[in-house]
Length: 253
Image (cartoon, rainbow, N blue to C red; front, side, top):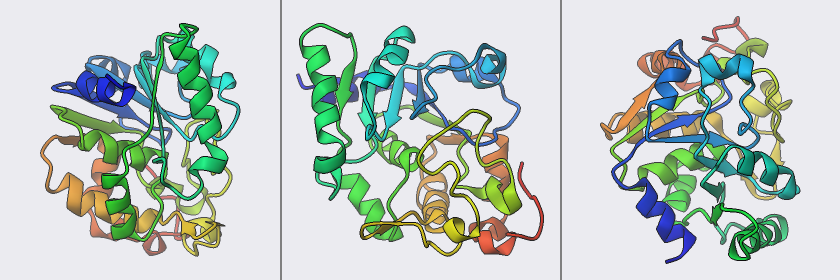
């Protein structure tokens, strides 16, 4: 059985909590840790003890870009008993071979030779590219995780700390303290509204991603549950376009 097949089997029938780096509701860490599977993103493996009451403590699955030094992640994943790490992007994305393939091979070999008890999987292509084409936008890591998890036979997906940059208006707290990724500082109007920040042929379009999630996932899939912050954004049409409230004032949760 391949790691990818093992991962699908592992998810089957499970209640899954996906925890992102955005401001989240007051539901708390005990709710997150009550789920069968806790999924986090990029460098969120080590939850500071001071934040566990709010963010939970477990990490069972990590979705990551894996375009840096993978060994930097290995110790934290092993220390936190992470069972699976998934790439944020499929093998047939245009940049995968140059940026990610070597790192994926390293992680897979560490498991194959018994160095770590950690399965590395590559994101499936079909659903990812369907959404990428429908939104004219490359999904970011959080949205890729949502796409992938909803394509699995899970019982429930609870999403907290993900809001498609809705909380970034007028310099709002788009990320929790200490979270770093390649887009951490790119959250001003040029990035969020003008799509000037490009990567090859791609852009990250937070509005089209949010609208797709709202209308094609949240509205149609009753497995999807969200925290109070994201629920607020989903309930009011004004939040479908960042330009409606950026930069009119900090309307973050």
